[in-house]
Image (cartoon, rainbow, N blue to C red; front, side):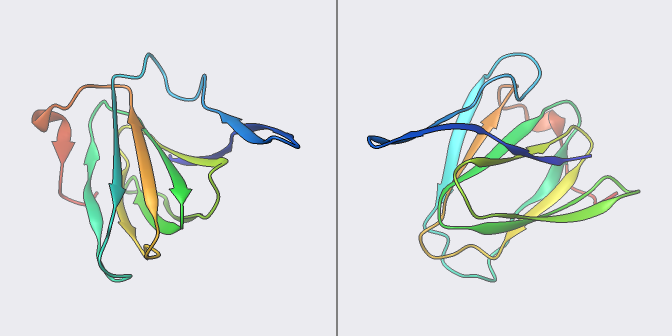
Length: 122
């Protein structure tokens, strides 16, 4: 099941530096970001992956993610750039409640493969 991870952050008078490492299995193969979502009611994702793991980080703003694996269901709120939601293979998810300024970074351990997606909620 998906889990929220606190990323290591180093703070000084120069600012903050947050590190993303050893979070996803394997190597990072893809990154993309979602922004300019028009409405708080707009939904993104509505799918899951068979083998891919994803890490979601709200670099700016905030959003909510609903996740289910067919047995467990959880809501996660990403509100800080030092929090990371790891979505496991088999977890189906919806992303919504975007604030206007949200920039959501998604990191993946797989290249894009349409056959890895499933759209029916478990």
